[in-house]
Length: 596
Image 1 (cartoon, rainbow, N blue to C red):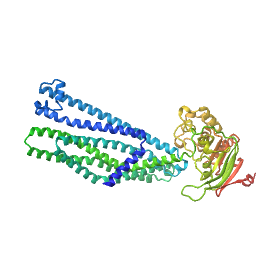
Image 2 (tube, helix red, strand yellow):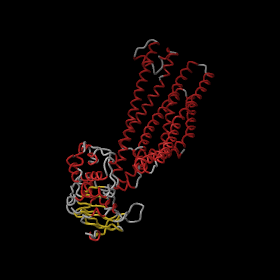
Image 3 (cartoon, one colour):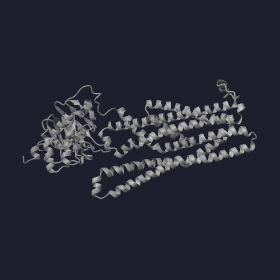
Image 4 (cartoon, one colour):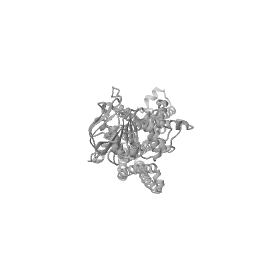
C-alpha cells in the first residue's frame, strides 16, 4: 500500500513539474468546481426523501424543518400544493445540477485540450532550440512519440485525474448524506464498496501497469516501422522487401491492439463487477430490513433514498475505477513527458548555445574574414577527436574547398562552421568577434546547401522561402535567388511558374533541378557565406558540371566553403585544405592538379 501511495505521489510530483503556474491555478479552479458538482449530486439524492414523504404522508411533510420555510414563503395550504411545490423544486434542482455538469465538462475538457496544445508546442519548441547533435543522437520516431502519443497520454491522465476527483467527491458527499439518514446501512454499503474496490484493483492493477508499458512500446515500434517503409520506399520496392515491412507493422499494430483491448477491459469490467455485487448486496439488505422492520412507510422512504444514492454512487465508482486504471495504463507516458521537459529545463538553465537575435543588440555584418582558432571536437561516446586543435582563416570573397577521405571530418568541420555542432574547445571568430556573441545573426550571414535535400510537398515558391510565413515571402528575392542558381529560365517556362508543385522530396524534378532549388533556397536569405556540403556528389557528371557552373558563378560575390567529393568540382577554388588526422593541411593546387 505504501508503495502504491508513493507511486501516486510521484505521479502528482511529475504532473506538477509539467504544468505551468497558470495551469496549476486553473487546476485549483477545476477542483473547486468539482466540489460544487459533488454537492449538486448530493442535493439531487437528498430531494428524493421529501418527494417520497410527500406521497406517503403529505400532512406531516409541512412540519419538516427543511420544508416549513417554503410552505410559509409560498403560502401553501393544501397537501396537493405542497406536492406540486416539491415536484417543481426537484425539477429546478435537477435542471440546475445537469446544466452545471455540462458546464463543468466543457470547462475541464477545454482546459485539458489547452494543456495538450501548450505541452506539445513546448516540447516541439524545446526540440527546435537544441543543437544539431540532439537530432543526430535521438531516434526520430521516439521524438515524434514525445510530441504525439506521450502528449495525448498526458491529456488522458489530466482528464481522467479530474474525472477521478469529481467522482470521488460525489461519492463522498452522497455517502455523508446516507450516513446521516441511515448510519447502519451506510456502513454496510461502505464495506461492500470497499470490498469491490480492493477486489477489482487486485485483479486489474498489475495488468494495467504491464500493458501500459507494452502498448507504448508497440506504438513506438509501429511508428518506426511505418517511417522506415515510407522513407526507404525506393530501396524497399527495388529489393522486393514490402512483405517484411508490412509484417513488422502488422505485428506492432496487433501488439498495440492487444494492449488497448486490455485497457478497455480494465476500464469497463470493474464497473460491471461492482454493480453486480453492490446491487446483490443492496437487495439482501433491503430484504432483511423488510423482514425485521414494522414501519413500512418509513422504510419505503429510506429505501427509495438509498436506492437513488446507490444508483448515483455505482456509476461514479465505476467511472472512478476506470480513471484509476487509465492513470495506471498511461503512467509511463507521464514519466516520458516529465523526462523530456526536465531535460528541456536543464538545458535552458545552462543557457542557449548561441544568443538569440533578440538578445543581440548590435547588428553584425561580415567584412573581412572568418578565423577558426584551436578547434577541437569529438562526438559524444567517442574518445577519438575528429577535429584536433585546428586553425584556419577564410577570407571574404574567396572560395575554399575541404577534401579528404570519407570519415576524415570534412562534414563535421562544415557543421562546426555552421554552428550546428559545438566544439569542445576553440572558437570561431568573424572579424574578431566570437560567433556566440553574433548569435542567431550568424545564420543570416551563412547559408547551407546539403547533399541530401529536404523538400516539402509544396510549390517551388514555398520550398525556396522555406519556413517563412506566406505573408512575409518576397517574390523578388525568390527570382533573384533563382537567377543566381541559374534556374530562372526553367521556372519561367513552367505553366504554373513559382506555384509549380515539386512533390514530396522533390520527386517531380531531376537531381540537378532539385540541387539548384536548394542553392536558391540558401541564397534567398542573401547570405555572405555559402557552405556546400558535397552538394553535387549524388549527380551524374553532366548534371554536376551544370550545377557547378551555377556555383562557380557565385565566386567573388559570395564566400564559398565547398566540401568536395570529387576533385573535379574544386578546380576553380582559391584555396584547398585536406582534412586529415583532425588537422587542416593547406594544399597547393599544382600538387592536386599537376596537369594544370
